[in-house]
Image 1 (cartoon, rainbow, N blue to C red):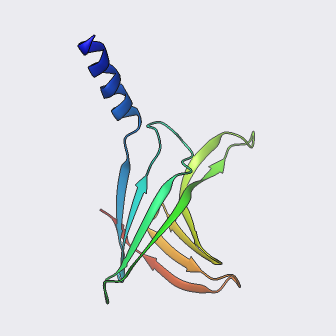
Image 2: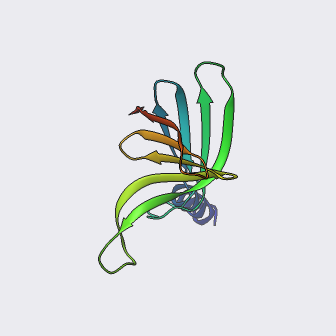
Length: 117
């Protein structure tokens, strides 16, 4: 019985592992944490913590992953990045390392490219 419980605990821990990624841009450190099951292609539970290198202030947001869909319109074909919202302001973190912050009128407030660590 102990072995069965231990095996179930291990499988549960592995299947619900969190993935953390850190993007380092000129002015910001962005920490992304995916709170989804392993193998889940389109994650809807993602945390964003963006910290300013100049003043140390940070913002925490919740968001989703973004993917390009295949021809059938249902199957995700290509991972594009992440999207977070803070009121009317949208934070996009792309797979290529681009951080964009866009206001409700479409004005780009921040556009920086960094390196994934």
